Length: 113
Image (cartoon, rainbow, N blue to C red; front, top):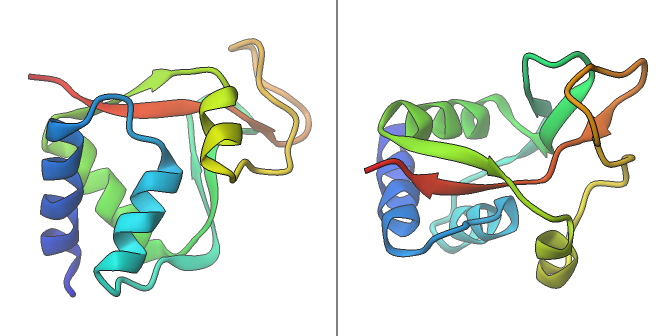
């Protein structure tokens, strides 16, 4: 499946569901046979603050396209991810000032209509 088609699938899912986690996005990747696993990080402009880990460049490009099409990230509780059963093994980011080591900023994806 090509990146644009996968981005459309994710955006349509986000439009129908509020507060979509990266676990849900990975489940969509799996459901549609999209290879997403890799060594890349979906980062933020804040030093050493990441949104998600262990994706390949195509998965990063898909999520970039989803954001370009109107989706947005909103901070959330890590409990969302604990409930979904997967969370990065990183300390949780609690400030926007940046870190010396990688920290995870839990977010969900919503559609900015």
